[in-house]
Image 1: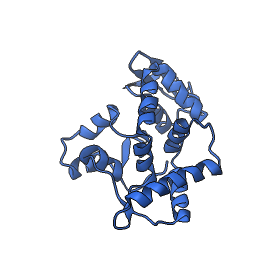
Image 2 (image 1 turned 180 degrees about the horizontal axis):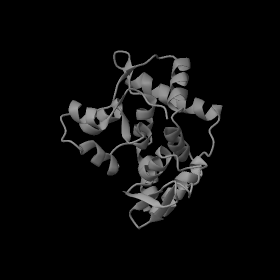
Image 3 (image 1 turned 90 degrees about the horizontal axis):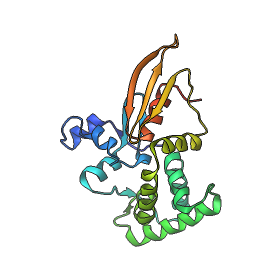
Image 4 (image 1 turned 90 degrees about the vertical axis):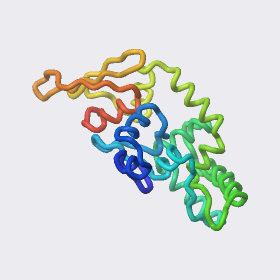
Length: 212
């Protein structure tokens, strides 16, 4: 997953003088945009710009150029983030995005940049997109939350083209949580884990190589 400057939960807590465990709690509560965080093994990685948005309610200003080619390259660069790319396609209701779709987004972003640029700086495309399509993104997030946990889980796997390796993990569902039990090499059950987010459950399975 594409990330800019990143920090760990403990680093965020140090920067913003937060109590220990605050960031992990806020991740589990869905305060962070999924396109701005990812899990590497047992460690969460968060973009600095997202930490600033969550804990200071500030958007990040980056150096920009009022030049269409620069804008187009920047938009394409941001869309390399597969999680963000997926959100954009959902918002635009496009299973696939072609070159013309990206050009149309670049045109819209370029208009915003021209109107809002200050001292050669403006918000990055991803943050602009969340602001510009705020209402539609809110609708999509509400639709996702209304889905049963099991449906959310398997929808994520389908998007990834993955399935659970039953020889490495066992998955069961409740209304509001997902239980994952590690399967040991001898076929017996290992540790159990409870997740309250389909994304976190899938991230855990990825981290222990239990997807195929």
